[in-house]
Length: 150
Image (cartoon, rainbow, N blue to C red):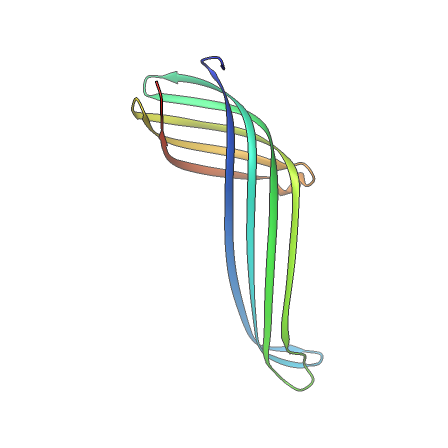
């Protein structure tokens, strides 16, 4: 078992975002493209293992620490060009990019106990991809935590 003021956390998450852009009447060296529609979908999945140290004062418990993890990033792009002049090229194009990297992260948060088994929580995670530290980000989460057991 862990000490009363330390805990081991495993966090699993997924983030997904999709966006579509449309441009019309695009002049090119080969003619005019009447409509270009491009959709890009990005997905990130992560698994983290963290060692957190905790302290509490009344109904508020704070935690902080860090650990290591794995981050997978996937991007899919699909483009459709339609309504082209004779000299311009129309059609569809699809591309996919995917990679995975190890991560290091720092975690901090607070729980606000509503009852012995229910708490509201807020947490910040600073995530650093080991192969691309410039791609670091901060992730903020809030929610309801339910406790089980004694």
